[in-house]
Image 1 (cartoon, rainbow, N blue to C red):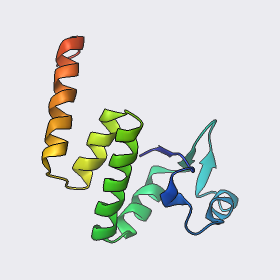
Image 2 (image 1 turned 30 degrees about the vertical axis):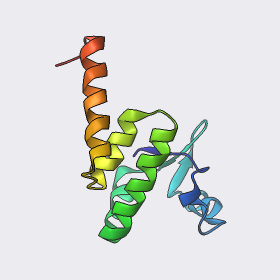
Image 3 (image 1 turned 90 degrees about the vertical axis):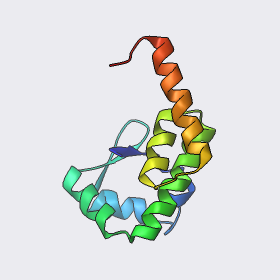
Image 4 (image 1 turned 120 degrees about the vertical axis):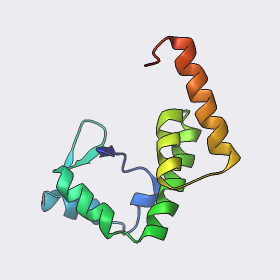
Length: 106
């Protein structure tokens, strides 16, 4: 995504990487989060991660957002992680139902 929270456990390895990324202007500090300084930097880093590792990271992020009750971001990461389990199908159905109830459907 555009922004990320450094408290996620996946960002604790290697331990001191955030100061280096800030110093080299790869990321910038926002009010509560960090963001990549440019979308192209984010895209290059993302593409450099091996596919199996990317899928695993999306699963971890999906679980994280689901625990935070952020079903939209959870569903997004589960889909990017190619999660085809019954769990993601149920999550998407609930999101669709919430959208229908809110009247914000296209």
